Image (cartoon, rainbow, N blue to C red):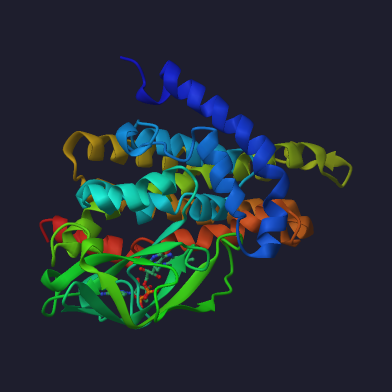
Length: 380
Ligand SMILES: Cc1cc2nc3c(=O)[nH]c(=O)nc-3n(C[C@H](O)[C@H](O)[C@H](O)COP(=O)(O)OP(=O)(O)OC[C@H]3O[C@@H](n4cnc5c(N)ncnc54)[C@H](O)[C@@H]3O)c2cc1C
């Protein structure tokens, strides 16, 4: 049976992505880390190369394909010298527009999905609030219907691409308490009362801008409701599986990149008159790093296969996210250790991966929340 990751089409996608990453991303990452954001033109460049719309339906301006194609793109961005931060900032539409693509009206698809996939608009997804992110069912940002609009009040935080975003898909409370009272509304930048209150300074993912957003009596047209009123929680949960797999892909690719960077380093670096790679303790440490990167990849790809086959696989996806992201943390730590003082310097790539890795166990559902999900699915 053909390996779905190795079809001719996907090999071509991988080669194209590798080429574009080498020219358009790798040479610029450090500058973008300093700038604290990605240039808008990068979205257009990726769109024009046929990469931004990967895994979105062709009639919406996407490139077709599925989660495997998105994963290949993320892998190549990281393996080619980019970073998790680049994936987060450039591919934010992967969390911002799927709900619109799946449940939104043709108007919303034309207004937001198509221009985003063309690289003309940047979108963000705003669920988390200053009061808490793990308990999505408890969000407090409220939207009250008033004639042909909803009036939104509240605040959101930790929003990826929130500083640059032209529109934000916002989780709001339109009904009563709990998960049954949540809806998704698309809010345009520039709508009176909608503000970027703060650009958040972070440990890692520094080239991906992150914002705190405010909503004070923001009037949002009713046609910007995604799907039906009070269906937002279900839409968010459907999408969480793909987001969690995406983070696990970042984790195994980052781990593999650190293995790839460490091997030539330990071969070249000499201490006490011999290369580091001649020491068994070093060789075994690198062997463990490679094993962990492989386990992270194999687990994630197995969970992805289960998810694609069943449309759910909540147990497998939660286990894969924790496995891959925890292993990535271990591998980046080993890489910094083997690079010695050089690994601690801001201009060494493993230092960046060390910092970038840490978010993966927090975003999209923390280690603890994944374990909560897993434990509920076990006969405990
Ligand atoms: C860089 C970055 C980018 C992000 N991007 C986005 C984005 O684009 N959109 C968005 O909506 N959100 C985004 N987030 C938010 C992210 O999803 C949340 O940070 C995450 O869900 C955790 O929520 P919290 O930070 O409020 O932590 P809390 O929910 O306050 O949890 C704090 C700690 O308590 C633990 N905990 C919570 N509940 C329990 C429990 N019942 N049992 C045991 N332990 C528990 C958690 O695991 C965690 O360790 C981003 C965050 C960061 C840092």
